[in-house]
Each structure stands twice: as C-alpha cells, then as structure tokens.
Length: 70
Image (cartoon, rainbow, N blue to C red; front, top):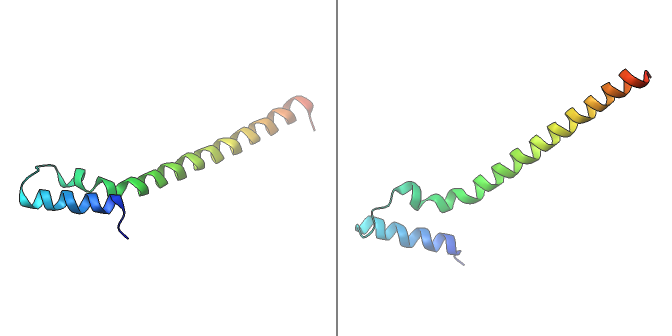
C-alpha cells in the first residue's frame, strides 16, 4: 500500500519531469527528509536535556558539599 507522502512525491516528480511545475528538486523531495529530520531534532533535544540534567546534578552536588561540608 502506498502512503500519501510517496504518492505526492511520485505525482510531483512526474509534474516536474514533464515541465508543468518548476519547483526545485529540494522542495519536491522535502517529504523524504521530513521524518528523519524530526527524528534528529528529537534526539538532539533529548540529548541536550540529559546533558543539562547531568550538569545541574553536578552543580547541586558541588553546592551541597560547599555549604554543608560533607
């Protein structure tokens, strides 16, 4: 079964090859890059959140040792 994204890519590619539309190939194939780019963004955001949590944990540990002294 064909997805809507693939159907749109096929239709737009045929229109591009026949000269009916003059869009850039980058815009035509943008549907292919949508899901991988969303996955990369999610991975980066989660990675930054983990790094920030680790930094805050170390900072709190340092401040605890500094003020409590244990």
